[in-house]
Image (cartoon, rainbow, N blue to C red; front, side, top):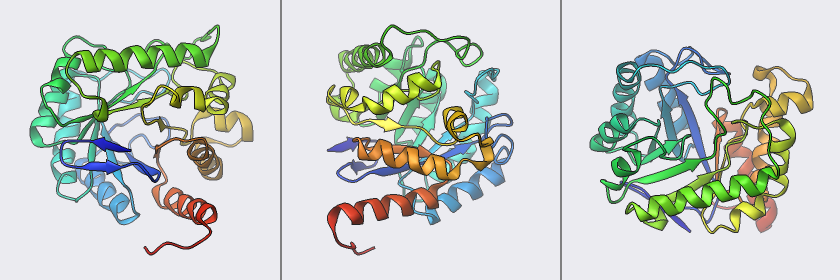
Length: 280
């Protein structure tokens, strides 16, 4: 298994850790901490030092109830940090739904577009298809961030998410995006209740049966707070447990805030499975 991206073929035969770099004032757990260029650049360097496999840079908060920045704001937040991240020797993803920012980021050399709206905005499919090696992550979200958590209802959440992701992957391939460039994300917490999220984890094999690698984003999510009673900044243990549960069920990539702790947890999980300690 390999994820083809602009500069790297990412080996997915072992789990990979995607580190979150929110260049926003209002993200749900770290809003404002890395909102300046200098802070975001320093955070990228810290995550690389902690062993991150992929950096994911975003300029739009997608927490429930979030407002959407205008295009100029999002571009101004992301591109300076992206330029720096591209010098750090790891794959770099841009978390955006805007075709204009996708093209600008890919022109600079970004490796991956990570789109919570699964390239549904006009021009998004063409923007990614225009770069013949760029990777893409297609995520399921019911509604929009401002309203997505208002009583979401599904008949069978796993079936509906699976069908949506299959359709978006097929649309991407029809637009000229080859199969090996595509990763899928069920969108934990995006228009879903805690029970929906837990069903997606318990039945993750049904999503993997589509044949694409899966990215799981459980880090600090409200479902973990519902289970543990912990505030968002107290969910490290729960986030690691959820990441390992997702990896154990076949997720190829976990998207996290706490890189060092997750990297260490996955090393122990892999060593236990292999029955040996691998050379670092």
